[in-house]
Image (cartoon, rainbow, N blue to C red; front, side):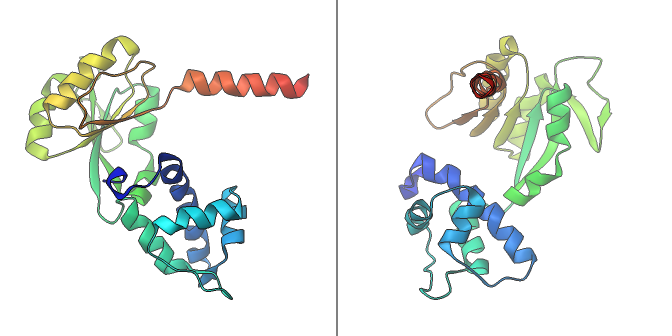
Length: 211
């Protein structure tokens, strides 16, 4: 849906940063915010803020800036955050467990409704309010419940098999933490988070800074 609006990927990745900053101002009761202040608090140049917000149907006032409440609503609409989407986590290890219990997803329109794993010793156990279910039950579960989003935190060697089961169940969006490229149909969106690449990049920059 986002790409249908013609919004470039880099802009899409900056919009949530604006939304996060705006929510802080909403909490303090501020009514307007300037593009320079929004950019400063988001770590983005003012000219880029103005350019990004041309994709949002809110106009700033020359002397006051953007109306905070209206801009929050517009950003939520553009990002598809006005409703709630149920999501599942596949992989009940440490990362999957942490993500399944993270309360901040609700701020972005997502609710983790179930947790799946292939380990028979974990299946049936409780993690918070979630009972761990078997991955073999996923396709039927997803079709019956209408869940369209999944988070994968399984080992690389299991990731494609899990992905195939998710696709069989009708999943359309995957947040992939497994260090492997997934083979999916064109109508399935995958967001990859490779922790090894992130750590390697961090290590490189720290080593350079230390000389």
